[in-house]
Image (cartoon, rainbow, N blue to C red; front, side):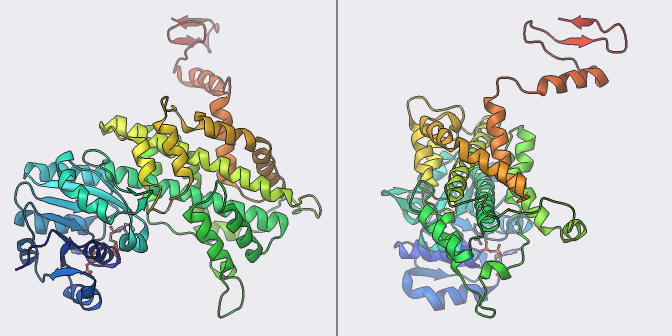
Length: 476
Ligand SMILES: NC(=O)c1ccc[n+]([C@@H]2O[C@H](COP(=O)([O-])OP(=O)(O)OC[C@H]3O[C@@H](n4cnc5c(N)ncnc54)[C@H](OP(=O)(O)O)[C@@H]3O)[C@@H](O)[C@H]2O)c1
């Protein structure tokens, strides 16, 4: 029997496309799926694209692989992944590699990695981004797991990953759950980016009365400059689409309830645990949640608000204002996401290289953008910034955006157009650059009702004011 270099089990859209991508790159790929029909369909429809070994059972699949075995699991995240691991692990030998390419929670990946390490098996949680098209034509791949496993897996994964300037969008991220952690934050950033783009659309649609097709032109134009990215590109495509059955712009007949699969929510939950303020991602998750609350929206419809956008108040210059506000807010969202990665890396001892991460996000993944090159440059400079906001290029962009950004947020509030992403980004920016924050007052309040103590600006130590006594201060 032909020995396969690698195997893929789980042949729904992602697994099938990854297997095809591997085969198209000249690798012999063993393929397996719980329901055999998927295996059959894949080989029947795409067998001519390369060398596949169709396997009906896990035993047959494992026997078809050269050693050490490389197995990619591409099944539904959660319990199905555990079920598949339990099925395959007893058939594997020490030194074999089991790669989970699904959207697993990184804490599950840590648990699975530790359990399989005891059995001598390398468990690699690999984030895979780019959707079904990416899986086939070149995704961005974020593998965690041991360095040793990357030596055996890296060449194959780099082979099938997207390339930017000849550089593969795949690198070893760090041990155990590091790969799935950065994939989670990638998705969180994606939520924030999409929310900001949606707000830009809404501001220009409601504020200037531009039609979806006019807005498609605006986004096309923006896609030629510093905002150039996959998400801006597809925004123009969606806005230009006309619904065949009604003749209306498709965006006007799509129900305005944004759904989510959970990675954005995980990002925020973990950020709360790590104490990292990812307000842009959080607002994006909440905005989707608000859109889905039909009951609340129904109850609140008709509540008083401003009278709308008076004619003549906004002119064409608002388009450039919104563009600059979008770019500035996007810088904030990415800076927050990279902060979370730094915090996660420190907490779990992963030593994630943010510059390498920005490099592999330049292509293949949903947030791919020219912008990621700027982030890479910032982290690879001689003095990497503490926060991306202070990288010289971004300082300049944020400076240029100042008036526009503030005007847009003010206009949004004035005219009653919700812009939580733009607003929170600006508030975060102003908070970080503030000389003093009202947190001092909060400490005073906490000390008043709970004797939680406070620190002083002029002396070391913890202090408490005897609020219900003579109000003298104790401590030091
Ligand atoms: N779709 C995307 O754009 C995308 C992007 C990045 C990552 N991902 C992740 O990639 C993974 C695969 O995604 P997908 O959309 O291709 O497929 P999916 O719909 O998430 O999962 C379907 C696959 O899981 C298998 N499966 C489910 N329960 C199983 C069990 N208990 N035992 C064995 N196999 C089981 C199914 O086998 P049967 O055919 O026998 O039912 C099928 O092969 C997921 O973790 C997903 O989150 C998806």
